[in-house]
Length: 158
Image (tube, rainbow, N blue to C red; front, side, top):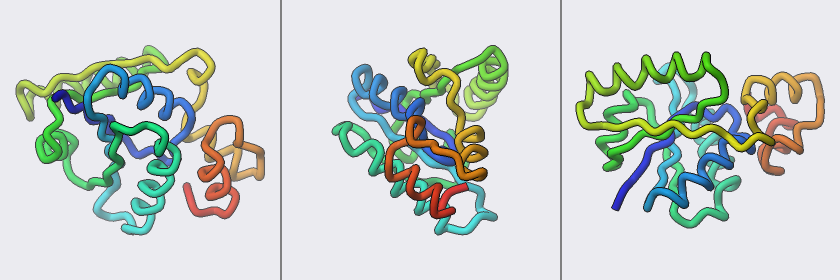
């Protein structure tokens, strides 16, 4: 059974993230969406992100959503993931993620990284842009799951 870890802050999770999870779920036996936070942040922030991601991905049966606040390589080992999934939208994303891949290999030899590009209709979406639009009261419903849009409108995410 191949388990892949898709780590990130997912602040908030958006349709581009969901697209990658759905596609990874067709490639791998088990997908873990690992939501990272800093040990300096409030645990309630992480709990909110985890709850929203679980709701947004509830239609994908072989996905688990788990929060973590350790090194990604340590979390991958903890959950039995031999592969890390990273989404790549731009050359800049690739340069950063390639550097992370090399560091992860140095820390955890044998841990592989797979890059997936989002579907074209989601390639321009980022959590930062979604938060900015929502922060100005804009409608983000076309970019995120309805539960995420509601949480953004209430100021629970960000």
